[in-house]
Image: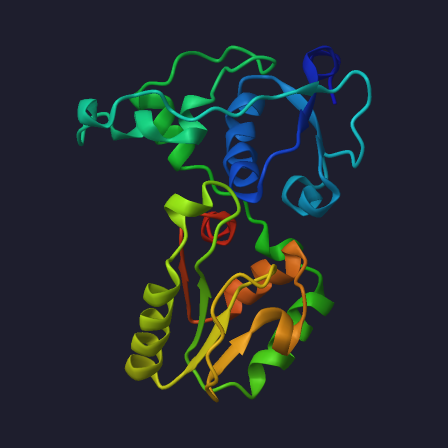
Length: 232
């Protein structure tokens, strides 16, 4: 690093959920392009998203970064300013991050164009394990994530709707439905082409989850971490 980068390195603590970490990881290139550098302290299970710039435990110098929802009234949004409701966009220049300007159409286009090639960093053993599990499943393999962690009541699928979605996917595809459920919160249905993540396989690490998404044929998800992870 140059001395300029050393002077502008910010130590940030970002202990938010998976979806918000995806947003933040895609923000960072815009700051770095403007001469700033960062050391991100995140939860250990999120470090894969920020490697190689991360620490597992925040020190005294790591400043927590709040992560706010948009305050723009929905009735004020249209096809010219819809990005004002985007959490990633509305948290640009939020302290303690550097001020890189107000959210406008120009940085929104730049933010949308960010591509982080995270998939090549998936360890070979994670790829192999997913491939071995998927090998004997009827195709297409459809991943379904229907229950979120935050704002669960408003974003998660009601159980009867979830069951109807199971039936529709099974009837339409002839493939396998894998329920992405880490906390035993989705309805179980006895069916030869339904698999439950922890009943029938294992709890996936983030690199394994990304590998599963890349090797599956389709992911159906609510506004939650796995859907946002597809950004990578």
